[in-house]
Image (cartoon, rainbow, N blue to C red; front, top):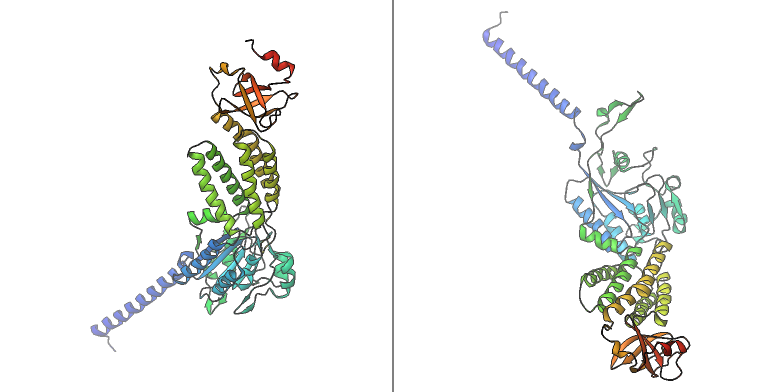
Length: 458
């Protein structure tokens, strides 16, 4: 049967349609085959470092809200914390928020040497997925909190973790971790992303790795082959500048040093009779230190003792001579420093010996050497042209043995007398000589031989 021109055109049109469909399918397959990690929904990573204070807890809740309102498919909390300083009720609220989150929440303790103690460790139990890097430890959970889902539990490891700690291998062996799909461990964050791939959490399947069919083979320097997987994009979120500053100031050693340095600077500024850089810096550091003191668990009696010690130290600063109150102030300061913090839920917050030695040494130098010298220099009465005072009569203001304060011609002077002839409060005296800003004095009667020889003839 002879084919007409009309039939030929029909066949050609049909063939073209088939070719177009084939090319379209091939293009689509090529696009799918060449898809990379950028096509996958991102995973938000939140750093949880230091003590869990209100700033960190609020930041975690904000991160969950942000993930629920965006395209993020999961949230990973990267934890390195020795405990919480918020109340148990506040931590329970955070746990409830994690449990009820519509976005899967994972907790990874890392990097290597990271710790998760106290309530920070309990985050692993309430999260949907938990894992640890090699070299990390969890434990010292203390009393396990109770949520709407029941008491926080680590399975067989719950009893051990209340008072002790476990490394990553021990925790995995005892079933304390919720990520058991990988045998190679989770040494870095990228491994955490790879391990999440394919998990079904809260009815959602996580896709954090490019399809296995698209894995590529690369050659190493030794010539061997290895599979290289592309993980989804990780979006890192940290505290803002102000929040980070306040969170850092709530660290036990930082709070201690900021507070005592700030008080010392304010005392220094008070005796310089003005408002300068030292006063401004002192005020700022005291405010930051006070924020830390309000955040951390303190012993109230130790804080009062610390304030009393500075009051005692300031007494001798005003006379420019380290005496009894300086020694008393340093003793009280040392006791207060040793007992300032109470244990948190993750363990003891006592200051390290390095911090204690640095703080005590700094205060000793400031109040024994620095500030008395500054006061003597700033407030000493000029003695140039005062030779006429030699031979003048005055009285002792307090004991002078061998150093003290005297009053001559209605003016207060720093004075020194011979050890053989000490003066008592109110005793009359005579000026024998002037040494810089210090008067060398002797009693009117019974002065030592060396001072009488120094007296100028009339």
